[in-house]
Image (cartoon, rainbow, N blue to C red; front, side):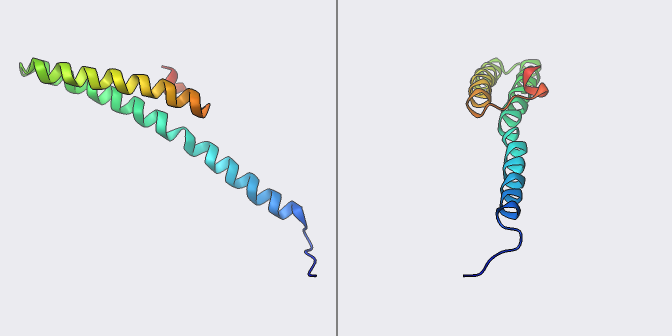
Length: 86
C-alpha cells in the first residue's frame, strides 16, 4: 500500500474548490433568463413603435414566461442574485 503524505486534506481542498466554482456558475442561468426577459420587453417596445402590435404581444408573452422560469429556477437552485431580485 502506498501512503500519501497529505492524506485527505489535499482531496478535501480540491473538492471544496470545485464546490465553490459550481456555486458561482449556478447564478448564470437565472441571470440569463432575467436578461432574456429584459430583451423581450425592449423588443416589444421597438415592435410597438413600428406598428407591429401582434409581434409585440408575442414578445411580451415570451417575457412573461421567462420571468416565471427565472423565479422558479432561482428558487430550485437556491441561487439568488441582486440582479434577479431587482
